[in-house]
Length: 398
Ligand code: ADP
Image (cartoon, rainbow, N blue to C red; front, top):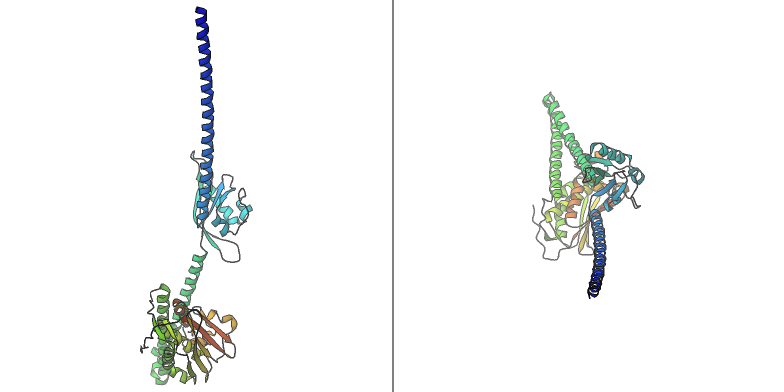
């Protein structure tokens, strides 16, 4: 009896032990599966984070370069490759191998020593002037050890170009102002030194002074107009304007000047409507007709023409039969202070700003301006303006 009981107990224990082992191995298997799942999810999260990081870096406007602790490229974003015009894979290369810009390599050595370099201006050694601003700093890991270097590149080229244009403009303005001013000063001193006692000489000198004062006045007016146009302060007062009538007014205003050079003026603009600021377009036509009289030949002909152009625009033209403009100068005449013949322009009281004002006004109306010329035969300036379709506003004398 006791023996049977003992056997039963033993059998129960064995069964229990087996059950327990079964349970244990099931649990272990589950645990293993959970662990694998966790690892898989962690890997996925890492891959997602890397992809997000890449998208983020590639969406940056600034160029970004990450170097590892051996100064080899670990990551270069899209903007960086674009700035340096690179297509090849850069990972693992040194700066010198990838870019061949020793100045940048020297910059990385400076970061190695000093920990950071900010606002470093780098001119890339290519044909077109290409400027970058570089900010660079060492990267450290959580234990404080050196992990690598990060470099951020901003494109400064446009800013540098604007800076140079501004400097040239200021230099030109100073020169243009100084020329008439020093003439005025010189003649006033000569008058004060005794020339005023000779009425004939005094009158001649005073006329020169008057002419140069007028030139200064014109120059300042033109500079103020350019400044107002460029800053967007000049608001256009748009109306439907009859261009035949406007051309007639301009030709009447310039009649005296044309007569003095024996120039014949003709208005061949048909009854065309334009949706424009009448005063500004008056300024455009006056400038072009005035130039045609000034730079055209004496006893010449100046004609203002017009036609309906395509896509809702009208085209106007001012033609002369003067000496013309050489081909290479045709586009440049619209630049500020550019003159084909400096002495001639100054003699005629020109400021060198007329055509750049014309270009600004036409562009602010959404039109275009250009010139065509044949040396020895004459010049035609063309410009387009938006066509008007409402009733014209009568042109009032200013
Ligand atoms: P400016 O005050 O010197 O007349 P503009 O900007 O009006 O300045 O003109 C720039 C230059 O373009 C002039 O100096 C002149 O050399 C040239 N130009 C303009 N219009 C004509 C034309 N109709 N015929 C020949 N040259 C012209």
